[in-house]
Amino acid sequence: MMNIRTLNTRVLTRSLYLHKGPRVEGLKRHPEAAFVNPQGVQYELNESNISKIKAFLGKKYAIPDETALQVITHKSFGNGIKPYNEKLTAMGSKLVSLFFAKHVTNNNCNKPQAIEGKNLDVLGTPVSKELSSLRTAGTFAKLNNINDIMFWQSSKSTLGFESSGEMKVSGQMLYGLVGAVNFYHGKEKAEEFISEKLAAGFEKIALNHVSNK
Image (tube, rainbow, N blue to C red; front, side, top):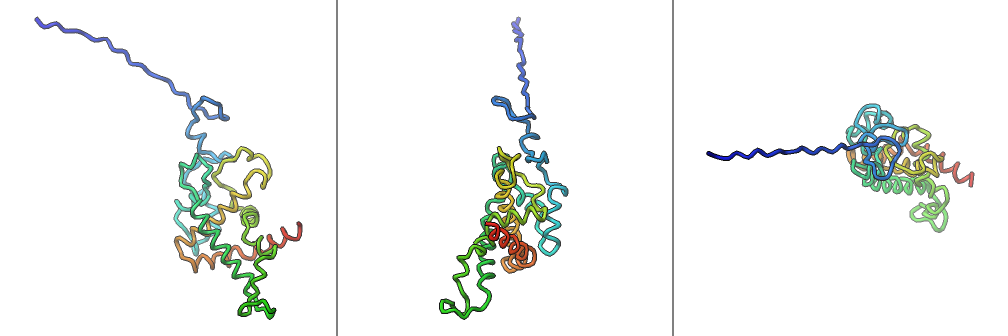
C-alpha cells in the first residue's frame, strides 16, 4: 500500500501601500501621484494637455500629438521615465540663436568694421544677447499661455516664475517646440515659424528686459 503524504502549504501575502500624498520616506508613491505636475495635472496624452501647443502651431506647423506631449515634458518629471524634450530643446535653441544672429545683422551698415555691409559687432549688444536667451523664451511662453501645462518637477514650484525654475523650463519647452517643427518640417520651415510666430514678441520682450536693467 502506498503511503500518501499530504503537504500543508501556506500562501503568504503582503499588502503594499501606495502613497498618494506628500512624499514620505519609506513609502512607495502611487503611480498616479508620481506622474502629476505641480498644478496637479495628470500626465497622459489627451487633447486637454496638448491643446495650447497645437493651437499655437496651427495646421501649418503641426506635429504629432505624441511629440507635442514630449515637448511639454521636462527631464525632471517622473525621473525621466517619460519621453522628454531635452534633445529637441538643444536643436531648437541653436536654430533660434542662428535666426536672431542673422536677424540683427540684416541691416546694411557703412561702418569700417562692417563685413559685406553687415556689422557683426551688433551681435555683442545686450539686446542681441537677450533675443535668444532662455529668459526671453520663457517669458514669451508665459505671456502667450503656451506653458499653461508642462510636466516638470521642482521643490520650489510654489515660488515665483523665475525663482521656482518655471521660467527656465518654459524657455526650454519653447526651444523644444522649435526643434520639433524643424524635425518634422525642416530648417526652412522652422525659420519661417520663428519669423512668423516668435520674432516680434521676442524683440519686444528683449528690449523691455534691457531697458529695465
